[in-house]
Length: 115
Image (cartoon, rainbow, N blue to C red; front, side):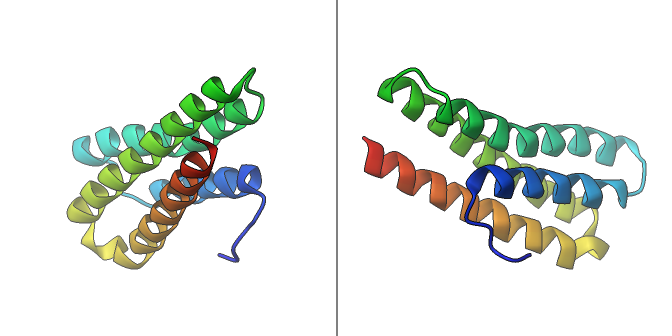
């Protein structure tokens, strides 16, 4: 994925990538639970980032960014579990893990500069 510097677009594209990857996973009780979790977390990264951009003040801005970062960390957790349950998807999942780590780092940098 080419690096996108508009973070709203980048977080949306990440969530779409997660959805596309999850659609390739076999349906079973383990994957069904993991998919629900990771799709929710991936979508929340961008949703909370957008809310931060519309924040009413600095405190609210930072709070929303921290939620977005927390969702990125949660996404990493679920992706690692998906990889454990679906080792045949390693290349795809590792790409998603790298992007979620990068998003987490970007959000951390914005939070640190804003505090």
